[in-house]
Length: 346
Ligand SMILES: Nc1ncnc2c1ncn2[C@@H]1O[C@H](COP(=O)(O)OP(=O)(O)OP(=O)(O)O)[C@@H](O)[C@H]1O
Ligand SMILES: [Mg+2]
Image (tube, rainbow, N blue to C red; front, side):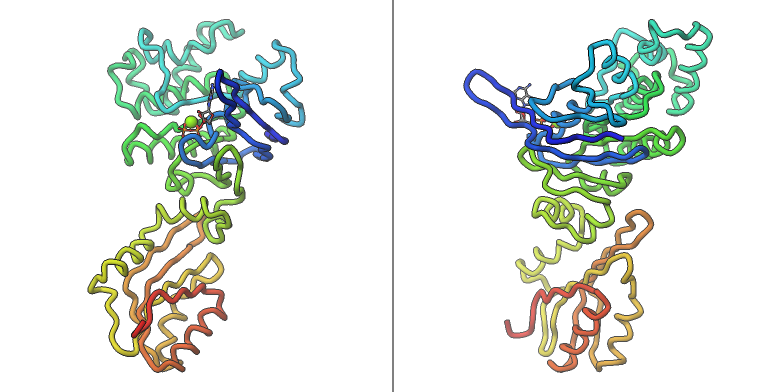
């Protein structure tokens, strides 16, 4: 387990002090794929670099399996660092070495024989799906392939933890997906804990089980991703989630007076949001029968997060005032969040 306790990091430059991390407290459990999201400058890289002490915190503790590594001597720290692999946005491969040599590099000076190193490198190449590229140079590879080599290299010392700093930010969406799939495999097959920095909620949604949201050096919210997506608290988290949810398009449509959201007499436009436990589309269709209202779905979005569905629906409700009020009450009774977006006449 990785535990950050009251971690502060202040950079002191000639004319100003930058508080890159402010009183950060985090627990990352073994086997987690832990996401850290925030805008540029939020302090994500600094925070992650504090985990392997590439940056030394100005104050606070970094506990790895209960040991405060800020107190360790250099030799002991080197041993721990070997168990923490790291990959970066721009891959950081050695250009003058082949794929094979790049992956074998961290094993230099290890106790392994040449034959053992050879087997290890080839096994890693197979894991990342690049067996046929062992003699290629980085310049002959695509971005996704370079990141695969970087992952293999980071795994050479059998780390327990893999830190990924914007590992997919330089890649197109499809390649991003394939790299995320590989990271998930690394997590599940090898039992490696992954800490993943990103500025995209879509990346968090795809593979993380927990997430911390950072803003101006602080962790403003942290939790399991299903809770965070279904009940975000901090405004920053809400903004990140909205940035990936097509349902927010509705606000633009309303502002532009689009035809699709134009109301007629007796109509009302609602946004319904339901969580994992309340996936009850049948309920919505039954409303019409029960309360004499017409309920038309304008559009919707369902996210599947950790095998649970989180849905949002934009619906047009039509009926008498009283019937609509009752229908809305029924929805709320079933824990469906109801937001009235627009009413006839106002
Ligand atoms: N070595 C340094 N010296 C001085 N200031 C630094 C140093 N490293 C980072 N900072 C500052 O600390 C703050 C946090 O930087 P950091 O790189 O951790 O942010 P980030 O969230 O990773 O941003 P990005 O998404 O752009 O990578 C920034 O204001 C940055 O300018
Ligand atoms: Mg960064």
